[in-house]
Image 1 (spheres, rainbow, N blue to C red):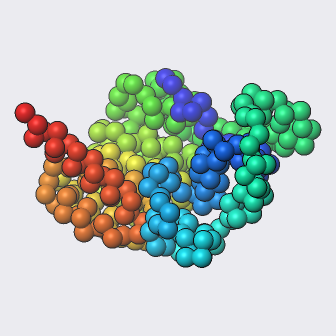
Image 2 (image 1 turned 120 degrees about the horizontal axis):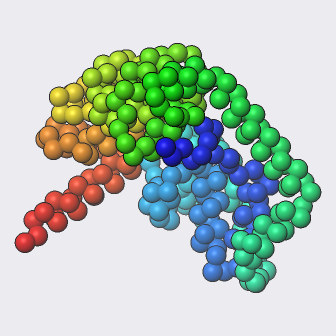
Image 3 (image 1 turned 30 degrees about the vertical axis):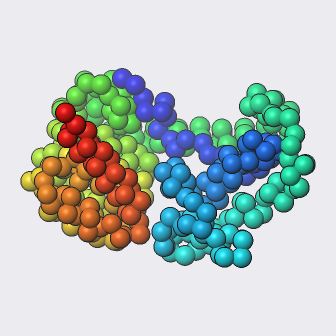
Length: 305
């Protein structure tokens, strides 16, 4: 059974030094300057891919969420969730202040960049520290998850983690009761997220009300996201009203985005009406716009002879 990303830990992110190296390379030549700005925006604002693509000059993604907007004086103002001011990589990046001629340097390939980084003792030492931290977390999670893994193996499932189920090709109905029981135990956030995501299967549909209660009460971000994925996967029209109520509740934050897939999948008119009504929600607006565009394209394809 394939392991999810071959690890039970969150993938390693770029260090500040690696971010500077990336921005330095992309800012050195004119052809790559668009990518330079996109990388800088992504690193500094946390915008999603579709939000970056949707940006145009003078346009912010929406009020109250991470993005950038033109102030009218030619400068950009960066703002985060709730109007907070995050790190501004473009404003502080010296590459954006270089004269155009100084940016026209030969391209640096990825292999050349990695060779430069690997020749830097500070970079190598920092990378080693991060790798050590990842291994420590993997070991910590493996120890914490041992009771769950033991129960699953006793039931005949040769797994190392609940994450092994996330991309499983075969159904695992006998594992669902075990996963549901252990989801309610005080495992680390990342472990419980894996358990919740493993429950995004039809066999977990009878546990809808339990999962809704856990989602409403959950405060840990990764577990709450995993529960949203599970609820979206098992929702059907019989629970559509309760699902819409969850999505309308702003206390659940951006995890509500993960619930929208069930509305997109539904053929019930209530789902389309809910999408239209939620279209002004600042945390949902861009995803809902994407969903409505996809639904319209499907409608047009069905009408073609």
